[in-house]
Amino acid sequence: MNLAVITDNLGYLLLGAWPDGPIGGLALTLILSGLSGLASAALGLVLGIELAMSAGVVRRALVLGLGFFRAIPIVMLIFWSYFLLPILFGVSVPEIGTVVTALSLVGGAYLAYGVAAGIESIGPGQWAAGLALGFGRWQVLRVIILPQAMRAMAPSFVNQWTALIKDTSLAYVIGVPELSFVATQVNNRAMVYPAEIFLFVGAVYGALCLALDRLAAALAQGAQWASRRNRGQPASHLGVPDRGRGAPPWSTEV
Amino acid sequence: MSLFGDLLAPRYLVWLLQGFGVTLALSAAVCFVGTALGLAACCLREIGGPAARRVLAAFVGLLRNTPLLVQLFVWYFAVAALLPSDVTAWLNTPHLLDLGPTTLRWPAYETLAGFVGLTLYAAAYIAEEGRAGINGVRAGQREAALALGLTPVQAFRHIVLPQALRVAWLPIVGQYLNTIKNTSLTMTIGLAELSYASRQVETETFQTFQAFGIATLLYIGAVALVEAAGQALARRAAAGSRA
Image (tube, each protein chain N blue to C red):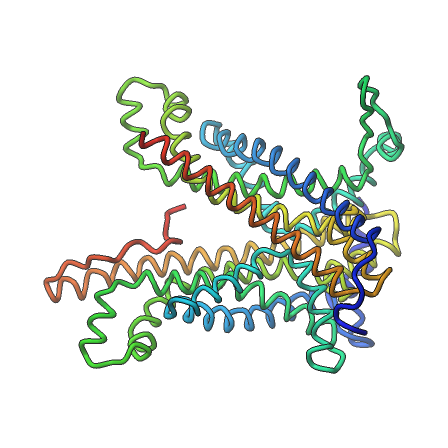
């Protein structure tokens, strides 16, 4: 093992050519995953709510659309955005925008199902109570259902973010200088230390993802604790057994 | 540049279909070996000692928490550099195995690296699905088996495992679908699968829409078919257990 190849290139692996050139390396990986994490969370929330609230043709069209993004490889989707975005907008789109678009669409499509499941996990009694109070459907959703569902959804948002960090490495295929790409550049320059370089890069990704994994587990525990506490209160207060509230799909003890 | 343009020349269609063939063959091999490895790891974790458990958990965590792309680079670049030079040389030269009517060609190094990388990645996920399935079997089942005088290994083998597999089957099919999509990453180490072929056709013909469109449809077709087959199998198993 020769760790000099890591220490000599550490700045390049972490920041790319910055400050003399565009930012890259680990910093760009974090930027890409942050941007696509936010965009996919927004997209997943909107599509998930639509999925839970719609019926009939709209729902079927939505399921088909989401199915498309879940069925094709992210690499293909990056190719598509690389090719279609400039045609759609009539201007050249920077590669970073291409990658964020592709990752947000995939992340949003996966999250939509988590969001819909979270909404559906809230018992029908909550809906009935809200409607009885004179709220409209969307008001019940916003004021009563979503605040409860969000707590249960939080872990799936963090899990999706972990997946996104790993998926940003695919930006490599269109030459975006994130961590994996600069690693191959360093490898091509040094030639003789591939093991050191790629094991180091793997360790960096691993540390990031494991930290987020812990966060998701902590959030999941918090959500379970909160839902146990909440479940007791209104039911005992009203003297009504809280039926219809199944365990949310992700709460299966692991 | 027109969106559709003329139809792709037949030889480019052949490229795409050959790439699709590589994708399917690689996916099948990875799913087969990955399932065997993943379930073996998951069983070993149940009935093995604490040391085996810790080592397996660490391996699974490592494989699941690093990008597949980096893992493929490790297998392709790093392992090639770490192996003794005569082993690398042997792996890089073509070998033919004469089996009477057919001759088998030893795969190129990128195929081997891609296969090993994808298989271990899939196995790690399948091991976790198996573990979730085992946790989904109620504890009373195992306790009842132990009370009937079965040894812990027998209880696991005959009572817990069959039920756990039924619970884990659809998630495992989900991993098969992921595997089909994940094979696209091997284009980065030069494996001529479907994504690689579509990119190649695109650069050669500039008929981007058709090159990517056909590849996309082939992926969707393969994923939809495997998903439908997996669900049909699950329904048959459910019907069989009721009968």
